[in-house]
Length: 303
Image (cartoon, rainbow, N blue to C red; front, side, top):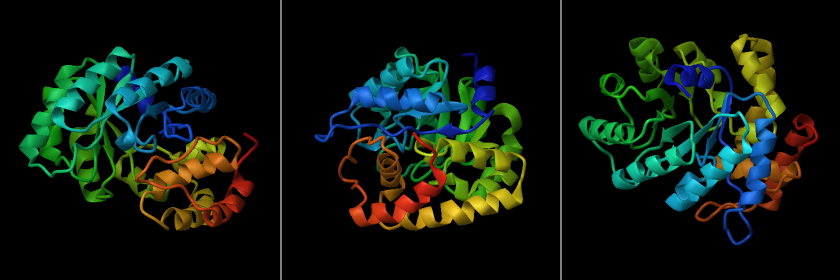
C-alpha cells in the first residue's frame, strides 16, 4: 500500500492489538489466533497490530513474531496488518525484513531493549530500521525510546517510509509540539494503556486515532466509544468512562502486567478463551475474574 494511502487508512478509524493465543504449554496456538483475527477483521477497524504490546511481543521469539504476522495476514482479508518489531538493533533490522517478506503492510517499532539512549543513538537506530525495509514504519514513543521533536523531524526528513508516531508517554506537551511541528507528514496514534481513559486529551492535542485493547473482547462498545470521541459527545464519553472504563481500570491496576492480562481475561469471559499469559506475566485470579464479569455482562454482546 502506498505510503499516503496507508497513512490515510491508519488514521481513518480505530486501531487494535489482537492478543496472541497460546496453548496451555505456552506454544503459539495458530488456529485460535486465525479465528480471533477473522472475528476482529469483521468489525470496522482501520488496521490491526499483529504481535504488538497486547499481543505479548515482549515474550515472543523473533521466529514466533514472523509466524504470528504470517497467520494474521492470511486471516485478515483486506484488513491492514501492522507488525510488531523491536528488541536490539541487529534483531530489529532482521525482524523488520522478515515481517516485510510475510506481507506486513507496515511495522510498529517498539522500544529497543533495556537501556536508555541519547537522541543521536535513537536517530541512528530508527533510521537503520527504516532503511532496511520498503514498508511503512511507525515509531512507538514510550519507556526508554522517547524521541524529541527535532529528532522526529530529522527522521521524517531522512526516511520517506516513516509514516507514523504512536505515543505511550502521556506527555501531552510533547505530543502537542510534535503534532504542530510535523503536521500532516505523519499519522498520530494514541498508545497509552487503556487509551480510552486518555482519548479526549490526546484528541485535543491533535491525535485523531488510537489503539484499543478492549476491542479484543467488546469491539462494538470500543467502536461506539471511538465514535463518541470523534463527534465530541461529552455525555456519551462520560457515561462510558463511569460505567465501564473507570471500574475496569481498578481491576487492571491490581498487579503489574494486568493491562495485558485483563484483555485475555475479557476474552475468556465472553467464551473466546485465548489461552494463558506467558510468564513472567500472570493470569487474573478467579476472584479478579469475578470483579470483571459484571462489567462484561453489561457491555459485551454475544460473541
